[in-house]
Length: 493
Image 1 (cartoon, rainbow, N blue to C red):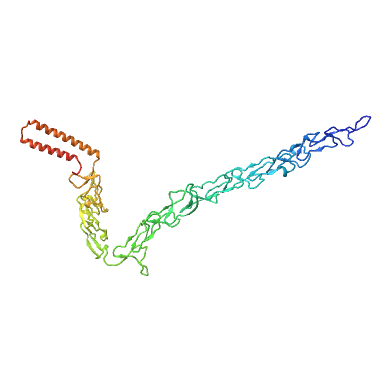
Image 2 (cartoon, rainbow, N blue to C red; image 1 turned 180 degrees about the vertical axis):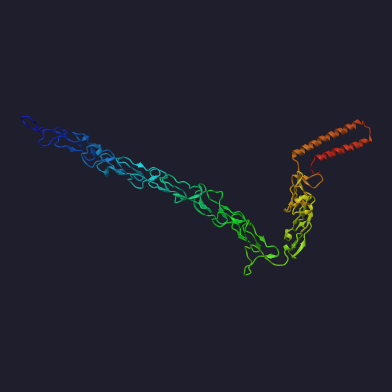
């Protein structure tokens, strides 16, 4: 530069300053540059920055921090370093370009800010499927992501449900529904039920109609099962209720379809459950079609003509061999349109096991049950509060022994276990408890000892004298003792 003295000459600018040609003073180097006694200021290199003015060497040039870069020289401030864009991060300082100083975030990560040195993991329920994501995408309904850093969302397992976005898990659909595509559920229709169900989770994959013979469950809210139709009823596939078998058909077990009655059998109604068919009675046979072929599934039978059980009186039965009405055997009941197989014993009578159509009167009439017996009405009435409560002679029951009598014995003469004959009669009464028998035995023993003591005292008081009255007294006392003991024991001697 020039000096303003009489003698004119130029002086060198100090380090960190420069001057223009013909200048009278020196100026400081701008920020982003430096001067080491040179004629010009040198710019800081790429990737560096400096905010110092009048810098005397390059040490004032500092590196752009990680997450930024500078592709130009002479950057005058740290904020003038270029930041890595969102979706990227930087790990080195003094980077001279985006390619060298910035890297894309990996799959499963994101970065929504600039100039960062790391990337964030996608949270649960979100994902990033490629590198360089600024934000993560939410899992759509029907999908889920159970962990961070996910690169994709998983489909809900078949039968499971996720109805919202950003799902982190899938859940079982509500009871009585199945999942549809994993994002929604549909209710199982009435008459249908769920199938392919997991035994533990109860999650089901499909639904199908209840099979014929079953109906919608009235108790299973999950609709995993169908209820069987009761015996004698059936249903069509997908039914919500059951109905009685139609005429000529039957269902012997629950949950089955109604079957046709076999040839020679019939079923005449459809208002009540039909568990079986009836054989065409004697004198009747199977219905036939137009080709004279016997039919299955008949609601009735065809009259063959001639005598039939319906022609017989209530005191007769129809003999199949002779096709005639025959008088009912003594002790038997022939009420109704029956053959000899329909005869049963009257109340108070018992069937002889090895003799055909032979009945024997029971020793104690009420021991033998059977058909109503007008002759015995009023003889075995059960009376309570001076009123007749029940007369077993009016009952129509199976051939069997009454309660307290042993079944299988002839004419029900033997008592069942826990019962014994009362006194000298044939009626069976319930035995007392063991404690009552013991008490009676003790009382009888005490009474006997007292009686013996009295007898001995009477004998000693006679001093050996024989009195004709002594014999009568002894006999009388013995009789009293025996009668007393007998009256105390309610068992058969």
